[in-house]
Length: 550
Image (cartoon, rainbow, N blue to C red; front, side, top):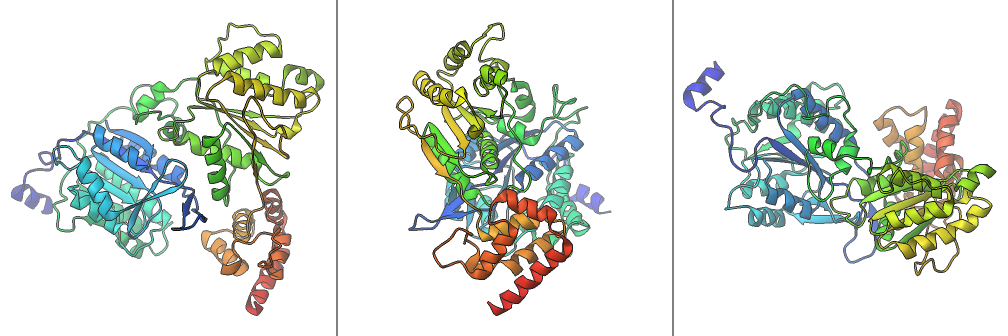
């Protein structure tokens, strides 16, 4: 009956699909800055990383299941990339990131946070619009406290905006449940209104969402008095999504997203543009956390200098930092234009014969051959010949070479490394090197390039406990992890480290840090896996008793 009344009172939804701008496409902007700087100070405050990869994969699977002719674009959220999206034209915009009551949070292009207030956002969008037309048919602001931001988009002319209540913090599980149901319905041709209600229903009945009846009410469709009985997409069904040759082998969203070079590309174009020049990067370790400030400092050193050496003792997480940083850079090739390609070399202990082959020169040479930078028909038998071709192929390339665990080099390799780096910097223009080692190289200049040393230290108390709780076999849920953190770490002790000698760290904090591995990630994980239930219970009881006394 309701459908009949709609048919009598207004044109059918097939006739009321919004036109103009660009057709059946959606651009997804992800914002994941590493730190923000307190106003008037140089103090950097770390920002805990969001699980954006899960949301990317969910969106990909959603449109794959819908199997309709809609282009899905991915990019990272900077104001420059938003302007590019508006200039090129895009039907729909999906933003995902941390929430703020008064700001939309962008990245600044170098790992920092860029605040954009609601009024500035409105001005930015309005002035960038073409012929005073709304720049988007639809916007989804997937962030907590995003109501004012949503209103800014509405004030700029966007007819349909989904956001979150102003005073509400949105559970990740609720956001994922809503996103999947909403976009699946929208993609197959349901109206914005119907899709929104289906999304809220999905949250209400999701077994993974605590307090689902409250979480579903946090989603808001603006303008509240708007006519949302309108379809956004009128896409035709296709046998396989994405189009072209992507059916048999769908790469991870991380790789799809990272291959956007100087423009925004649809997934099928990304798949077509993929070539062997994209070198595989090591996957960041599970549970990598607490290194946002370190990543920010190393990232900016890599962008500003040509040779950076991350130094630290065994188990401190040098390799984890390097692999995570490379993925962070690779996901931002549209903004971090200083680096086009990354070659990742992991040194290992080698035999006498392998040392003669060069434990870092030969792997780099092989990667350059695989990427097409060096012809596979060239027959090089000596390290000098390989070096010559390496320098020639990298001459004008914007490349980052990562040399991981340089301390395992031995014999002649130790002497070769500074000479190789000197020649590399002298014979190339834009190549950068990120090295990890137990100690600095100690050479003042390598082809007029100095060594920038970054000392990687212990995790602070808060992140030590977070890492322990993440891997501990006796902690099972997110709520239990939050309880462990609350019981073990007082607010004024969160940032202390085991090595602190300032007197700020208490004897209680130092004792717990010693039990959990003194802030060294490898030791923390080992303790988390090995601690017995009775020892874990004893630790928590001691912590609670001492906390009361504290």
